[in-house]
Amino acid sequence: MIKFFRKIRQQLLTESKLGKYLLYAIGEIFLVVIGILLALQINNKNEERIQEKELNGLMKSISSAIGSDIRYLSLIKTARVNIGKHADSIFNAYIDKQKPSLAFIDYAYISNSFDELTTAIYYQPNTSSFEALKNSIYLSKLQGTDIELLLHTYYSAAERIQKQEEEYNQMLKSDYQTWSNKFRNNGRALFLRYWEYMTEDPQEKFLEILNDENTIALLAKGFEEANMSILYEQQILLGEKYIEMVNKGEVNIDEETKIDFTGTLFTYAEVDFLNLLVNGKVPSGFALIYAQSGNEYFDGVKFEDDYTVLTYPENIFAWGSPYFSIKALNGRVTEMDFTKYKNVILEMKGEIGGEEFALMMKDKYDLHDGKESRVNLKVTNTWETYEVPIDQFETADKKIIETPLGFVFLGSKGVTIHVRSIQFK
Image (tube, helix red, strand yellow):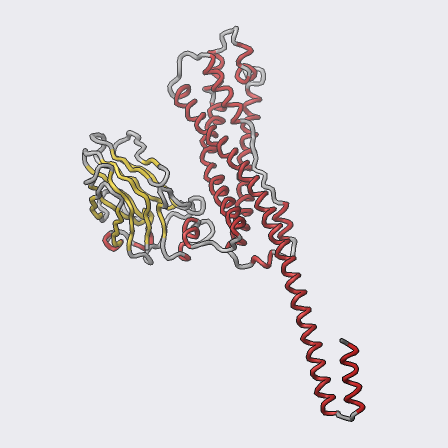
């Protein structure tokens, strides 16, 4: 090919056709430039494919690390929730009620629970793959995407969890050291290795140690552990969403998911509609609480597979109210501006049909005196959608809403309703 073009150049010069030669030269230069540009384009595409492949490899490596984190987070969450339950049982059955006699199973339950509580556990996230991504040239390719925000949020939350765990474990270690020093030669071995003393009569000393203020202070930490579970739940949700996006090859979050993660990844102002209930589940940033007249506790909220059951018992209370509260940013954000929303839309049904109740909404300054505006509803026994203009809740200042929605049951008649979804638009 080069010989061919050289021959043409020589022929044009020999024939003194300067104009044609210049035209030919320009054309040849143009072809060379086009060839160079094509080669550069091909090289750039090859480089992009290589970088894309390496980025995907890093993303999948992070996904694998987060998967490992999630399994460990689930174990920690279970351990902390269980110790909270054990602490509650010990207070109810042995400390508050002063159980007069202990069987072998009682010694075992108390001692084993105490041992579990005083054993420190830590969340240690696997950050090596994320650090590799941060130190690479590929992180910039994710700039401005939701998955970049998700990653940074996940690992920032991991640092906060580690810090909170460290503070808690240090206090636990200090309190346990105080307890251990107090009972070192005065029953410590009996309380921790009860089975070695069963031939004697260890009950009096065991109960003395159990009811000591230092032991009670340690057992009370079980309630703190149970309250920490929300940190792990949120971290698991973030991790699962990242894994899902990597598996689907997505870098941006859809509108529905954006709503579910409002308060964690986004602000409420970034979404055009807001969910309080999605297929019977309460999104992060909100809580569903049951209040009622009198002091008797009643668990009137039950979560099924794709709907929530709200129950008001017959002939027990004068009133009952399952209501939503705002608990964003680990409980630091408790109010919202609802002025952008016009209606609240509920998908629900009654258990038998014909159930009557009211809806309410409160701002942060509304008194708990039952004088807030209400909207009365009556439901059938089939799933239907009910749309209520929020302007009907006249007493609530929509700029500072603290209770986005509540159900109000009155009188002695029992009511059970099923609610699948609640959305503000």
